[in-house]
Length: 316
Image (cartoon, rainbow, N blue to C red; front, side, top):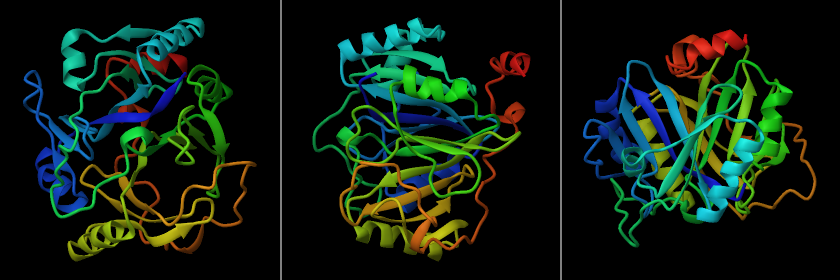
């Protein structure tokens, strides 16, 4: 599929009020305008798109959907053909859902683990309209997508990799330097970063491990780091530089219990002419000062959509 990257992500949370203050004041997100049909949710902007992150009322913190941006209508239709050829069930979004997402068209489908995905094109935007919630240079998104997400999967199967590589058309980046079985994948049209999505094997566990966001300069990383420390927010890893990417970053936990990795490019990503196999996770820093899995990672029974849960259990 001709996918640019992650266009948007949606979450459910019982902590909307905490996000209303945390999003702008800690992360520097802009508050987006709610669709008329969804007045109860909270929409965040990080660039000139109508929104990149949506938080919907829910009883448990969980990721509700991941929206993948096709480069245009023809790529969108080709993507649907890919889903059909692979016997992946999908549904077309109606006018109400497309308006909520701010896109021209979308289809919904699930990966073999049970996470909900959406393929779309034509998200609404307005040039030079982004205003951060606090002084901030802004985020690197635009043609590279909103960022990356690392998910925990109770089963890491050949079916999952086949879906990502042969249906979604992603490139394999590598297994990383972490412990256990992990796979990092990059969308076809992403030439800026190493990965858009990763799955880490956590037997009996499911949920978001972290979401990575690129900011425009090192100062934005440092100022966010200071705010997190001043507020004594829980951290996963201190400031550091990974071995496989020339980036500076740190990880802290947000009100939904998964981590944000705030990232600045020290230099452009070097590409992957061969598969890297780092001897250690980071060149310096990234001291582990909190758990690797936050409170958003639970059992599949706790985080799967209740409508899909019986289907998931029947496959076990």
